[in-house]
Image 1: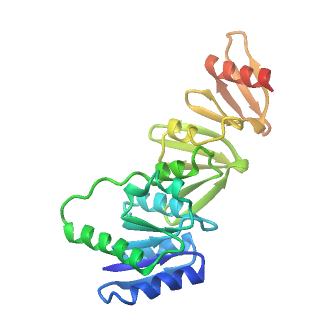
Image 2: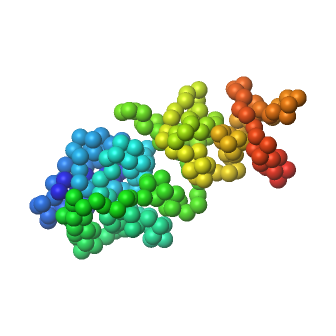
Image 3: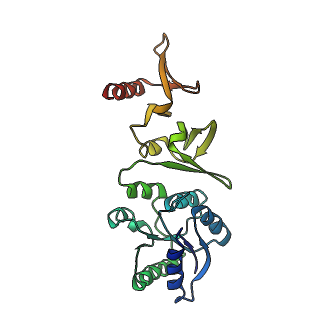
Length: 253
């Protein structure tokens, strides 16, 4: 079995490495200190199993999984995390296992045994893992997104939501407008809407979500067609339902 250890803490990686030393059938192909290193290592080594921390800078564990899913490269996962148990209950059934820091050698060995059992069951088709975006939403326990990761070939862009102007639906993709650029991400508009802060982002049209901070005014022509006018001069269509949502926000402010 080929494994990767992904954690931004040197000591945490050392603990996993020490426990794996007692299992000569497991090869540690690489250790990664952040999510970007992890993406490169998975592409290079094609591991069977990754020991993955969740709370990491730049890219967290869920974002790493989401980007791997986009390439069809999601390996078996053992989460190694300091997340509280309540949050973990939301997604624990959808990984091989999770190890709550600090963990014992016995608990580690039990997780590795599960990974071996899954590998031994191949080529029987595994159960479909829950998408990483859903796991992240469960772990956030209702807290909205703070950033969105987008992969375009080898390039990964992290979009912080205070830099997101608006979002447009494009079939099974969303177009993200940020800092004068357009980025495409494979996700539905409805799915993304459910993860955004409704006090900051509002569905103004069946095809558009707007960052309210970018809105200057709403214009209406003689045919009762409305447009949202943004700070940069962009115009986005506003449906009747979208205008009603805006009015409710303004009246409640």
